[in-house]
Length: 523
Image 1 (tube, rainbow, N blue to C red):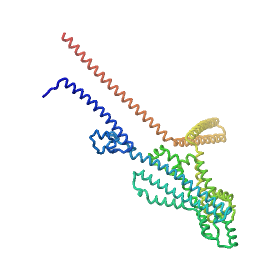
Image 2 (cartoon, one colour):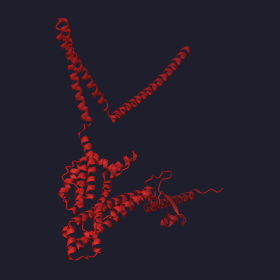
Image 3 (cartoon, one colour):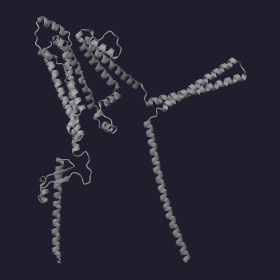
Image 4 (cartoon, rainbow, N blue to C red):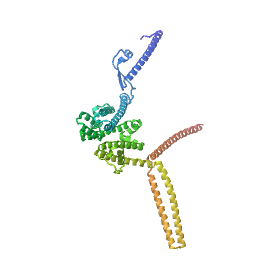
């Protein structure tokens, strides 16, 4: 066994210290390189356990002996549970937010396109018999514009449902898109496309069929066209006129997009607090829920807007139906009057629809009038009803007034008893005795009636107990009891500690006394 000298050990110590410092510097550089690699890997991939190629960190590979194998670097601490919002879930939330915004924009564009098509149809129906003839270039341009708006609307509807299916895939953890295509969804999309594809096409018939009539026939056709309700000449027959009328009226079915726009742009759906509380209470945020919220917050405005829009649309549809009969209901002022009295279920009988289409419109108007009247009565009843505070004040004042009347009635009973007793003592006439008895019975009846009225009032007031308020009171009482119990428990613990201290003091005192006694005995 060899021993080194002191000088050699000193040199070796200095050399070892230098090697330690170099190792520390190397470890620092290694740590810095590892930190840089971790930052690069975090910026490129936010998965739970990301794998990074060793070629991305040359310094780290060189210090590890040039090994080019993959290095697994966990982004979270060992033993720490990864939260669900990391990684793919974060991208899912971002994609879901973008898809919701795209759905809102597509729905707004679809509603605007549908309204544009309806306005063009109304303009075409109003101007064609008077401003230009059927089959003219103006009619063809407007009808082409209606067809183009219909095509754009169909594309927007398909794009909206494409975003909806992608949102379904994201919500259900990247399932196959064919799972989302249920029978109900396919039927709904097909029905929407069918409704949005409806538009008048009579102008194309006018251009397809050449004008082969002579001058007399053209003049007769022009005179008959002036009485027609649409931009279609009568040479095609009444069937085409009825078809064109039906297609024009069915274009108003595109207004179903209004409820979708209200739902997607409502504050109820956009508010995170609404969604979180609703999810806890298993509430589906549908148009029915949004409509209930609107009817509770703005009942008068909602009903007024709906009634005005329905009045104008039904009046124009009635004008469109009745215009070809040259009747008085073909004018807009008469149609407005007829729709108003039908909506209010008055029916004076001065005007009546003549066509089957007009009768259907008036029938539907009467049904909607009954429904809106019922809602208006419910809204007015709710507005005129007293709230809880007003009811409490009203019942309190009524109770005070009835208590005063009961005291007066009791005083009247006592007075009549005294008068009857005095009459008996004075031995007056029988007529006076019967009169006092009658007054006494009337005073007793009034007293009983007031007592019964007070009991009913108090019973009704007791039914108005505010259950949430009672629950809060019970919670406060329970909290006070718990606090009192904890205070009592602390006091008992402190008393036990003091008793233990007293016990130790008594033991020490007894030991001291015993020592003193032994010391005295030893003396």
